[in-house]
Amino acid sequence: MLKIVLVLSAVALCYAWATPAPTPVPTPTQDPVDYFCTRDGYMPTVDVHKYYQCERIGPHQWRIVIKSCPEGLVWHQELKRCDFE
Image 1 (cartoon, rainbow, N blue to C red):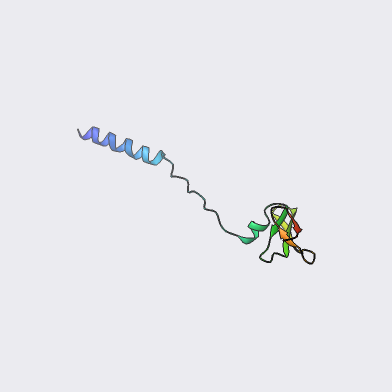
Image 2: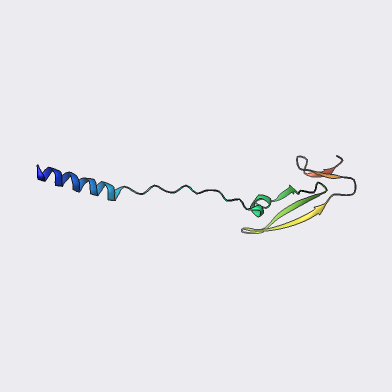
């Protein structure tokens, strides 16, 4: 009986040692720069008369430029251009 208990204990220890630990799931971070410049294109600002233009200039490097709409026009994100309200 003692041999069976020892064998079962050894098997349990080997199984626990061979079982890999679960991989932690990464959680996303909120970075305002990543929101605006993760791809080339245009993004809105809080001011409806302005918009951001993002341009990739290298690996993980972005140029962000704030541009203004002409007088009397506002930025329309769905159209990706300045237009009348």
